[in-house]
Image (cartoon, rainbow, N blue to C red; front, side):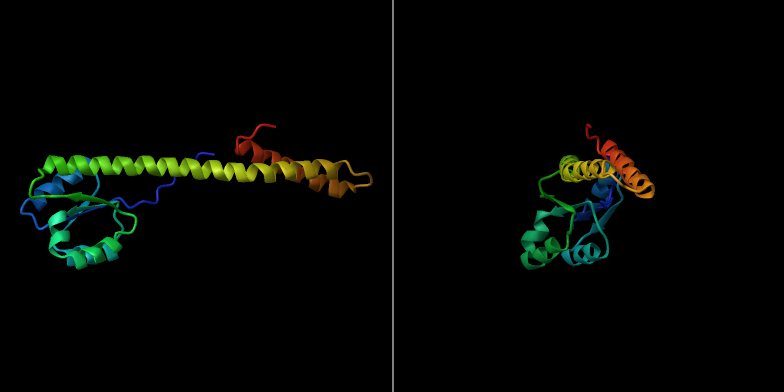
Length: 172
């Protein structure tokens, strides 16, 4: 019952007024293969976050410290994007790239774990229902006087329930 559905955005927002912003944006894009957009102010970032979904938002801590109220607005608009806080005054481009990779990898692992837990919970929930359905079908098929048409329909339901059980990976 492996389902691999990707709903996450695949774009990075880089928020910094740093003079090295274009160099950093290129490095992030090359390292992650995700398009990277730049916002040099919190107002620009807030606007972009309202327009699009991002997988990650790299935030220059200077911006948040300089305008804490506007920073709160930006943080509220991040949605499902993972924030990566960096001090561009002391961090080189390679460190920013490393921090982003770590955050994206952690998010990917957490997403996989959450999908596996959800899949197992669904499997466990359906297990009891499928078993009850199979037992009900078996009992109904053993009833005396069951018309041939009803017996054929019940046999079809029984076979479908067995198919569902097989797809769920449940033992007989």
